[in-house]
Amino acid sequence: MRLYWKYVVILFKSQMQYRASFWLLALGQFLVPFSVFAGLYFLFERFEQIEGWQFHEVALCFAVIHMSFSLSECFARGFDNFSGMVANAEFDRVLVRPRGTIIQVLGSKFEFTRAGRLVQSLLVLAWAVSRLPVEWTLLKAVTLMLMVISGTFIFTGIFILAATLCFWTVQGLEIVNIFTDGGRQMAQYPLQIYRKWVTRFFTFIIPFGCVNYLPLLYILDKAPGNEWLYMLAPLAGIVFILPCLFVWRIGVRHYRSTGS
Image (tube, rainbow, N blue to C red; front, side, top):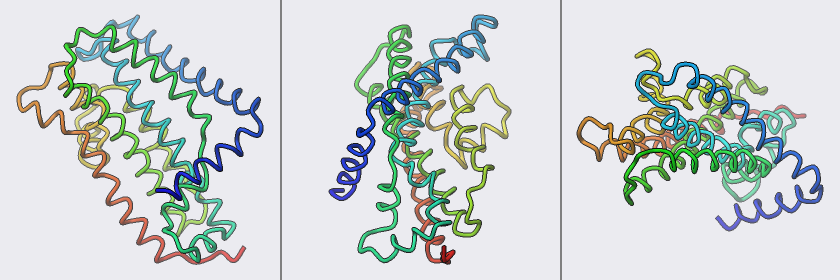
């Protein structure tokens, strides 16, 4: 972890060399998601509720998933840009260094300007929490925190799987955006509103439902019994990254240098 934090400090200092650019990009990341949230607002202004879910409840779901995505984009950007490392044969140097490949790829790039998106999500979260008629307890607060952490692990796992494909394809595949950008757009609503096959896929295969739906039922006192199962559901998102790391190790063993 000491090496990881050295990567963080070095890249943060390098990005702060151009402070005007940094703050403008962060401001853009802060403002752009408001258009998405505005679309959410006008949707509920027209229909008032969706499958029994009220605006403030969905706003909480929106805030959690966008916080998770912004954290993953900030700290796991190295995997998202991994195709360039393979195409330029930079991964050859990673392999000969006496450190793990995962920590080196993670530390190759950070997007600190994503803090703008994170701040916007925090504001939406604070506003939604203040409007919800929920009796907050320590367990509910911990569950909410686990939802954000779990979502970050899921998006990071997807970035790792997308990077692993580059060992065979060299270039990144746009189809992966279905599960990153598309997953973010889908998971900002409770899974209940989708068809059953979508709900099952994004619960048992890619466990977004364990981030934005099941624990939300517990927080909103809608869980139909066995509340502790709903409270601990976010742990599935953390476990999700383990098979992703295993697939990554398989990909590393099959790496062939491009010689560029």
